[in-house]
Length: 121
Image (cartoon, rainbow, N blue to C red; front, top):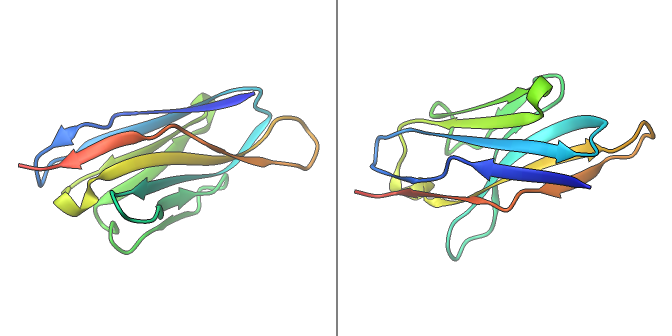
């Protein structure tokens, strides 16, 4: 069994910063791509940032230049550094990872439970 646990969500003022963490644990053989998504009230879940096992990174246009995704493979953890936060960044942020649990060439998508980020004065 694999678990993803996010942390770091909080209430922050506009212009502030937060760092989200997502740690994977359990029967992990290999972690491939890792992602951060977010879902605001009444809106669809959207992809915020992604990072491959090789370190290739991509961002949604709405967060480019403000958010930074990174990963620590030794800790099975992905991070999202969020700077210059805006009220429009308010959402539940979810971690997603593609993980293989044994050496066979199969991997599966796992989700965390989400962490709330609220940007408000």
